[in-house]
Image (cartoon, helix red, strand yellow):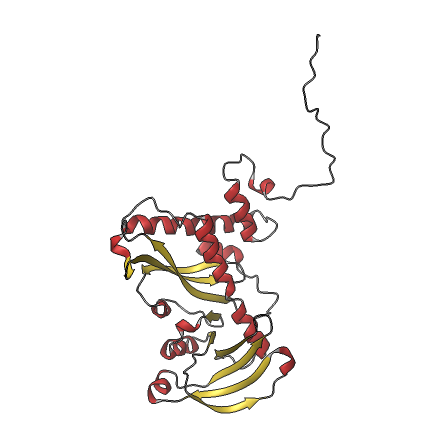
Length: 287
């Protein structure tokens, strides 16, 4: 992870033009069979382990991961993360814990998440918005209730946004008051990158079937899959391969036994070259 982070350091998200790196935090359950993995029971007759990941969104790189039991709540992962001053962290509504959000704020970092429906607050100030872009309101708020005020004593920004694509009303919560409301919405949308990351590693890096049924064997296979992902990312940058990281991973996954240099494997075929005129049947001489 450190080696990959060093190779990709310095490049930023051109679309959002943020002054810091954007990270997405989420978890995924890796399903197991309770009959084979009885130690992984987490809900009724189900068995699973949970992979927590902090993903550098711009580069599609995991920068911090933990593997825990399936019944461990997602929000506990925030206690293990070292937040980078000036960094942007987008998290799902399931991670909303005001005490932990205040820890991000005190670290000098920024968070973007969705507000809970039962959030109690009062409006300190309302700001003018351009409703043509989907933003319905932009407010500075303070939390109500003694516990919430104790956990997060500062001000928060509440943005009501209507997504025309999904026709959903979304309410965002952030501690950043300087960015445009549409940028805040765009930051949260980039959280989808970590969902694509989870989907890819499960489909292509053998996280659906395991070679060992003990706890350590499962952990070794998951960490090996992540190492494989990172090794391809390192090769992608060192060889200056064209296209996205997921494209390179896709090509390697179906061509793992090809005896072709990697940079040649991922290059696009030149369709301008005329095909060779190869006869369908060999000519027989001497008759």
